[in-house]
Length: 165
Image (cartoon, rainbow, N blue to C red; front, side, top):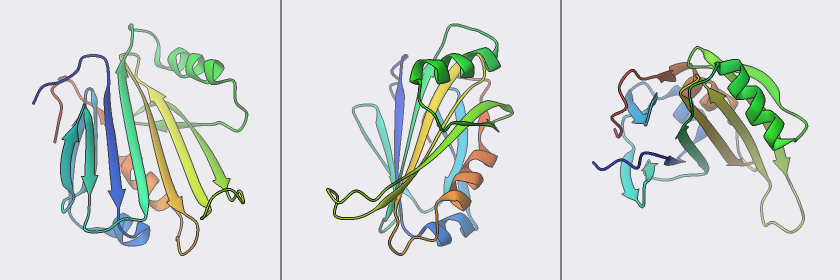
């Protein structure tokens, strides 16, 4: 599989948030220097450096973008990302044993047909920075936090830079 050195994007389509978070069999996936686990039954498609993993049906989406950075202290890297975003509402967190931040939002604007919940994470280990966004329809959703926590708990930084699942 050919890797673009500057960026990899992962999009995940998920069936039921609750059943996904409770799925028993998860498999390893890797995007540049970031490894994480996904349910084993997802099918992967690749188009223009975007990896898309999908179960049989979906009501939730997850995207992960990973970028190499000039080596720096991880906490400084996250602070620089947050400063550049200049948006309120970010909470400090950890993922993959390194600094991260999280922001939750709900979009129930009348312009949209459905209301959505979004949780965005960003992190850095000093060699790679990443952004992961999980979005779910609010109607009938049991929340995306259990899924987010399970994916983030499985996340770690790889020692090799080979990619793909």
